[in-house]
Length: 115
Length: 115
Image 1 (cartoon, chains in turn orange, yellow):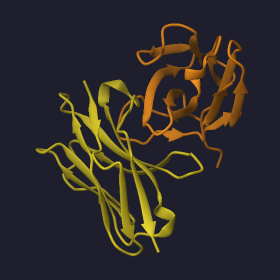
Image 2 (cartoon, chains in turn cyan, purple; image 1 turned 90 degrees about the vertical axis):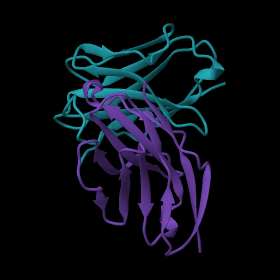
Image 3 (cartoon, rainbow over the protein chains, first blue to last red; image 1 turned 180 degrees about the vertical axis):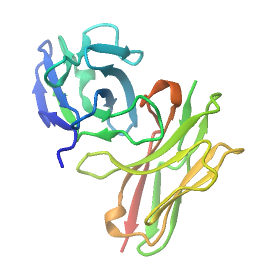
């Protein structure tokens, strides 16, 4: 029962480097959502993607952050020129539907530490 | 705009007793879903229970039940017969139908179960 797979689980980057976070949705799921969780806070929505399309990126910072979900392969959240404030846990969720009435299945998260 | 309020930063409960975690929400959309997630110290997000805004009955899943009071816009989680393994952060979340799985999360409640 392969759930949502995120890798790496932990990522350390120096300030100014690039971070690439990967998310493989559950089999058959074509909708992916990225969330960010700062320490001691709830998750904050970043971006919603379907295959090859960004549906809603209202929670994504305008600069340095980008996301993609190609036809083949995992979804990628890319953070360029990381800063200390980017240190957080980044969660990916997937679902087979774009409606409510279902749970979203979350991955185990990637913990990014910027040093 | 959606908003989730969890007014209890931390809660203690004695093992085997019941505990209620509060959640109030604010939305102008008549159709929405309410969710509870558990986040243990290992960090993953575990789905617990879902309540749809049009559901007539309160949702139940094993030891978890959701006390849904639509007029008061509250969706409290009740955990019966608490176990030591229930110690974790608990997040209330909501989405509106037309935004897919774009969840808004509350700040969370840290539950500690005492032996």
